Image (cartoon, rainbow, N blue to C red; front, side, top):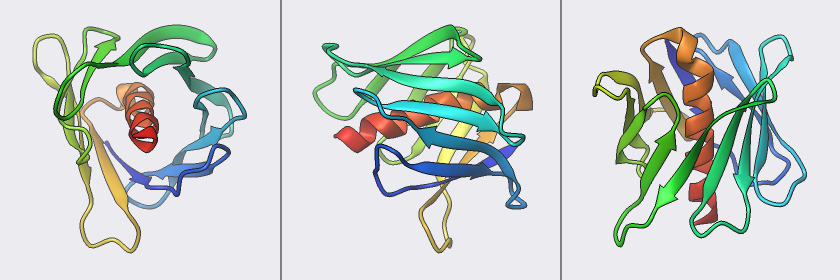
Length: 155
């Protein structure tokens, strides 16, 4: 399953859409007023299905992930002198690659790919593709991508 994430201009209250290859809306993301990033994810029918919430006053950036109000995991940035590395506390998944360059993969604990994230070429606006192996994982992968994007916006 391929999802297209159209890069937005940074705004605390930004709303934008995640599309499939045919430009059909799969998810809508709405930024909410909060101390730190708080992103609500709605499915195509407008039902709230997930939240990505930044934990403020943490030593390194940390984002809590919620599915339908229930805590399911956390993504945190790990200290590294050069580049960025993230630790994911969810399903044993791991993130590897160049997250700042939008060229990374999410894999399961055994190293099998869950999703690949990359920049789409030849588009009018900055567009990033999220290739998810199992469509049942689309929401979870989207939450991870949103958390990394929000953290990259802050520098």
